[in-house]
Length: 232
Ligand code: BV8
Image (cartoon, rainbow, N blue to C red; front, top):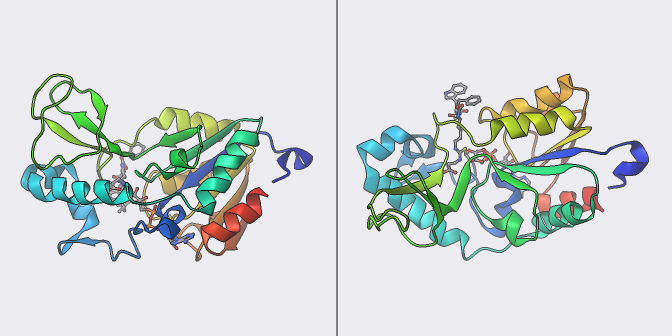
């Protein structure tokens, strides 16, 4: 990535489930998008949490436990290297709720859909680091109420830090999308914002996505191979 030589100063990188696929974390598409015969979109919603809280909490407990057994892959490591070495602006906006970007060493990471390893108390609104289960209704470490939910943005909820994301895209010279199918709003629209604001746009994905036609360039292949090739 010799951005400086071609005038690139500020980079926004959007990552999706595909960047963690080679770490053994199911994507939404490859995993068949099902949980106990429910579509993920039907489980990952506030309505599902009201209708069947145990089902939803077990869904997240299972995934929270699973991600703690996974390791970052060469794509996460390459992005962490770029983050360390890049002296312009750089922001990794991830749709993922695993912590593999951070465990690879990346610092400038924004989780627009929340984080598996946080719990959010619906009584006192405090978010706490959480590696255990929630289905057993543990007490909030802050207020003591048994009112913890996953700190995850469900379908129909507002993604986090949208202002910061749009500000970063406004300043970006380069927008890179890695491992996302382009199926979920508002993330799928970011490349159009970047295009409208004059940034170069690059897609790195295993296969063409629903948004490929919006990118100046699409490179296909597994992230663990094509992301280090792009970074280095
Ligand atoms: C919102 C946390 C208002 C939960 C997630 C009807 C039409 C249009 C839109 C809507 C609609 N009805 C509702 C909506 C809005 C809705 C939406 O988009 N629904 C979709 C289903 C149509 N969106 C929302 O509700 C969002 N909120 O809109 O609020 C608003 C609007 C604007 C501004 C402010 C507010 C909230 C959405 C957040 C939902 N929560 N995650 C959890 O994880 O359990 S989204 C969830 O889906 C994950 O974050 C995941 O990242 C994402 C799926 O997308 P991908 O990451 O792309 O994963 P996917 O499996 O789909 O694709 C993987 C890709 O990787 C594939 O392309 C594959 O080829 C590639 N790949 C695979 N292996 C590899 C690889 N690439 C490289 N290497 C590999 N090895």
